Length: 261
Image 1 (cartoon, one colour):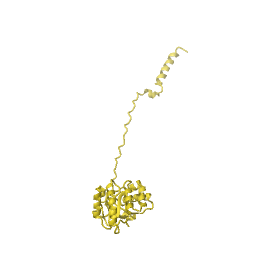
Image 2: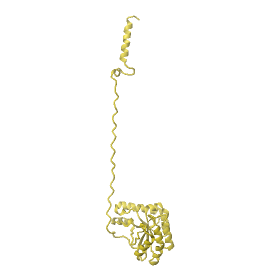
Image 3: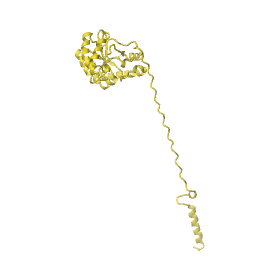
Image 4: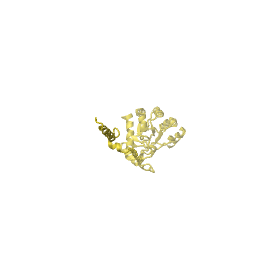
């Protein structure tokens, strides 16, 4: 190579390196000033959707007096015994044993939840010749104040639980818990073939008075044709059990104990 060619070759190599810039970058990138990484945009969290609590349907007012059409008499000279809120595994068998010993029958107003929980007791009630009465699904004292649709659904659900335990047993009666009847409820019950069952003697044994008080109240209020309300469930019914050991034979002797028609 000629001596003059060496400087030219060196100059060419310098220009080539300068043009190429940093390894792995284009010439434009190499010429550009160092870039500053952009800050990420803040993430906007969606506002929480407000929770809307649906309004409960307004209840009808409780009537100032009992509506017409309630059954408040046994339909005969005999006294009808009714037991509410069961069945209960502790107390219902005790009442059944007392009734069997006296050779009389009664009407058991059963709560749907209890019938589902203790179907064998429902079956026993029927097997021993007693009547069944629908007493609502969970003893809803405000059932009669609800819509006709809600009333019907409650009674149907209770009937289904009773029939699951005793498929062939007739369900003739319906009793509103607490006696808070409304005319609308009576209409729905009758549409379903259920007769509205009230009472004429209430010793308020649900309030756990002593047995002697229950006995005194029943004896003082009972007449021929009375329907007596007592409880075989819904709490401690030991005092009712003790009172019935006296009342069942006494009422049978004085008036006779008759099933509801």
